Length: 315
View 1 (tube, rainbow, N blue to C red):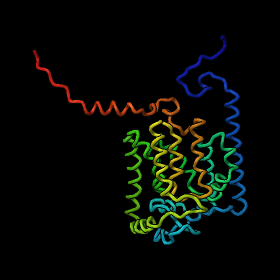
View 2 (view 1 turned 45 degrees about the vertical axis):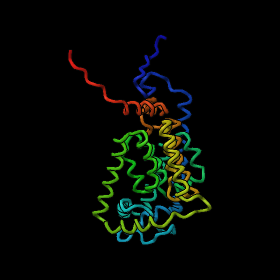
View 3 (view 1 turned 180 degrees about the vertical axis):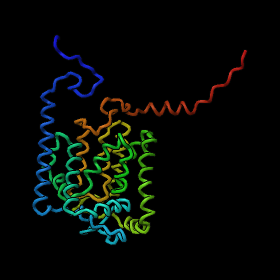
C-alpha cells in the first residue's frame, strides 16, 4: 500500500517497525499508568500521615549488628534474615527512617509495575499487595529477582540472602542442566556470605541457632516442611515442561513462613502473561527450549551406553 512504512520484523519496538499502535497497546499503557498512580497515591498518603505501618521494614532498619538474632521469634522487631542482609540493613540505618520507608515503598511500586504491568491496577487493591506495600516486606523484591533471574542469574543471590528456602526455585536450572546460570547465582551469593563472615562472623552462630527453631504455623497455615516437597514438585515439573511461572509458584510455596500477605509474591506470574520487560528474550521469542519428553532420556541412555565404534584398519 502506497505511503505505508515497510515493516522490519527484526525491530521489536512496534513504532520503529512502522506498525501503528493498537488499541490493546494503548489500553495496556493506560492500565499501567493507572496502577502507578494508585500505588504512588498510597505511598504519598502514608508518607504524609504517620508512615502507615512499616512493621517489617522497621525490623530491618533497627537490626543490631552486634547481635542481630537476639530475638528468635516472630514478635515485633525480630530480624529473621541472613547475616549478609543484616549488613544491608545496617547501611540503610544511616538514613532517616521516613526517607527509607518512602524510598522502599517506591521501590516496591516499581517492582509491582514491572511484574504485573497492566494487572497492577487490580493487584494494588488486593489485601496481600496493599498490605505488602504498607508493611515493607521483601516479597515483591523477591518476585522481581525470580523473574529477572532467568535473564540475570546473579540476582538470585538476593533471594538466597533474604529467604533461603525460596532458593528451591534454583532447581529450574539444575533440572534443565543450565549449570552456568546455577554457578553464577551460587557464586554471587557466596561472595556476600564471605563478606559477612569477615565483617560479622559471630552473627552466623546466632543465625544457625535460629534455623534450629521450626517455622511456626500462623492462622492454621501449613508449615514450610509440608510445603517444601510440593514446591520441589512444582519447579521440577515446570522445568521439564518449560513453564517459567512454575518457579514463582514454587518460591511462594518455599517461603519460610506463610502470612496473609504472602500471596503478593504471585504477582510475578503476571509478568509472563503480559511479556513484561523483565521476561528474558528467549521466553518471548519461543527460543527457550522445548519441553522435556520421555524419549529424551531414552536417547541419552542409548548414546551413553552404546560401545564406542571399533577403529577400522587402513586398507
